Length: 253
Image 1: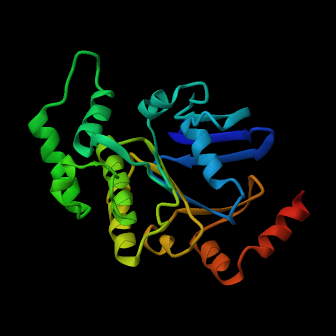
Image 2: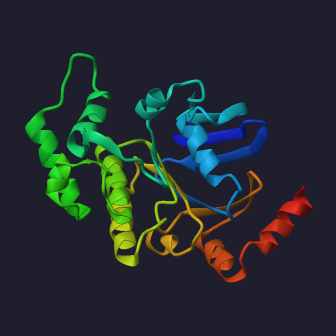
Image 3: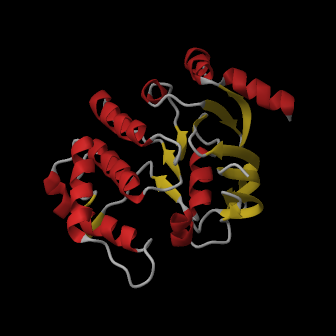
């Protein structure tokens, strides 16, 4: 079996409302896929349900990492299985420094009784902070506390770089970023691309895909994928908007 993040006929509810409807998608390791779609179509719901958010109930279907189901795993177990979620709106965590947070997450992935080599850890951390243009003083700051939008997103990508997941979901990473911050974050993501990482990029706008060029683009509407293609599909959406996608979805229903 080819290594992949496989989503099979997934159905997700929030309260008594169904948001994700028989959703299927396979993201092979080494590929970057993008999901686009209008507000309210279920893009962020998909991301949070896969990550194990308790408010999002998976009623049927499955999600598998390299052939192993993750939907009955706890949030931390999904993370250790190789899934990473970069949030659209990263939370502030007062009192927990960036360096200690990432170190604890890395330690949680080690066999019981083992611990990180501190000098090697900080060497790697500083190298990756430099690449993302994050001031090294940020290691002692509480996670996202008082950060700008760009600083929060760079911190998310730093976590991604340090945790080395098998599959990453980037939920509207471009939200709230100016062009300079967008370029820096995109450069960080592109530096991580390769045979050991599969990524799902969720976005409203084509501009992000100018910097993170996807292998495939999928358009989501009313909880399911209604059209797939290459980067040219994102350009078509940029010029036409989403009304024609609505027609495709309604004709397919």
